Length: 342
Ligand SMILES: [Ca+2]
Ligand SMILES: [Ca+2]
Ligand SMILES: [Ca+2]
Ligand SMILES: [Ca+2]
Image 1 (cartoon, rainbow, N blue to C red):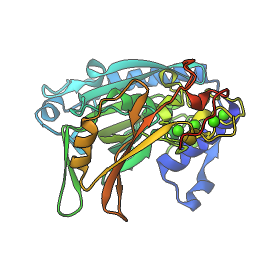
Image 2: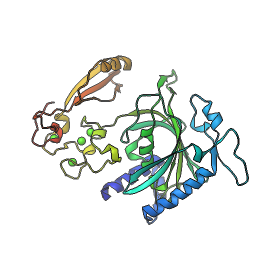
Image 3: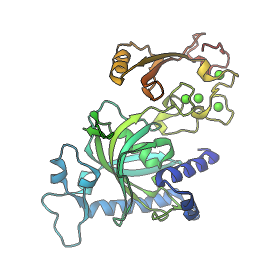
Image 4: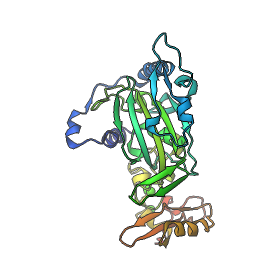
């Protein structure tokens, strides 16, 4: 990963996950970085001990249709104590996952309580709406949401962008008269992350450097992002399989595709090299019905539905990635092809 982008990334994640006030930024301190491979060994040993010495209230949680972050209680199994009959040792319940980040192979663990009944699953570069609670290995609760909050997964710790795509969003949601939204059948689980997929060497607030992190979470909704507003969704402008935002730079101008508004560097904006057709309706349901009726070609996609407060209506776009010369490279990535279409 490009070093410059790495620094930007770390800064972004510090600011967005901890939700610092300006004063808080003075308390963010970085210590000299340990070797990541060595630190991962230490962190994984600590995580394995933790998972083998802590249990959760599985019987109670499994009886709930929509368990919340607060419903899942993790308790230490003290030496000599017996595991309660209504509990499950974390190590017996978690899935072990591996991922590569900054060229280091990391292990992390997921307790999957509810997969989530919705058809959508966030991509690592999408926005998610979640409830969450963050714990240190000693049980300190360093952060939590009181109502659902939105996170752009490109600006939070790398563990989140790996775990969220493993779950589905809520099966249904209902708008209440008081302005809140009720969710049913949302994704719910707990992630156990090594510090290398968390804040690593950064010391911030109540999170010491090299802290392994536990996050309980409820995944309500996700939204496809288009970070540079060029009408090409970010997931097509990154290397999704590698969770890599920063190595796709088609025109090699050091501005990576997901934040480059002229991806092939031919002087014509990407948004003018794709075909955009707008759809609108007075209600979300009516627009969704219109969109569902569309038969999409393999080079077509739909943008997320947006509510427009000024017009009190809902809109979405059908985007066609044109390839006028038929060479398999869409116009917006083909510097030999620059016909404006919009
Ligand atoms: Ca884009
Ligand atoms: Ca570029
Ligand atoms: Ca772009
Ligand atoms: Ca272009």
